[in-house]
Image (cartoon, rainbow, N blue to C red):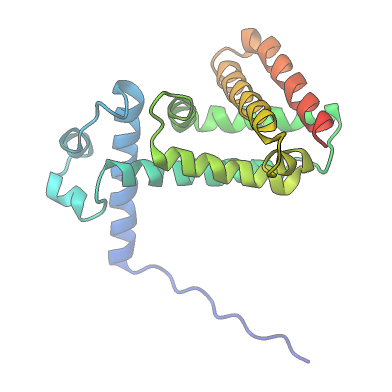
Length: 206
């Protein structure tokens, strides 16, 4: 029996390519503004000026700055979830954890601006809904890989404590990766402690 043929994807039209380029350019301009002056303080007009376009043009691509933040975050978290797929499961050894965390640090180095932006917004007092939803996507990717993260999401009397552990582990790992990306030598001990927490969590909650 012959396998069904797969229709090749049609190349994007010139109009689609231009739209994708414009959206990418707007996201880059907004990302830098969000990072340098803060998400809450950045206005649509400032994004338009930084992107070298008009406010009305921005509205043809994004309804508001929350949509822009979502687009920036989706690209970042898609890459992050691909890194999760490299983590051996269901209970990786400490050596495997260390190798995986090194890959995570390299990813943060490559994506330093969006990483700093998303991590900073993720632990702030008023976390934007877009960041909350995207961070859940990362947690789901970990839960699909490691039973400890899946168990932390289960209902029951112990859930609040498991959730607290999960948040602390991910927060410390995120900041340790940022510190290691910024100052490799000074950040290494912090990364080691974060790896200790990660290992303890996946062992205790398995």
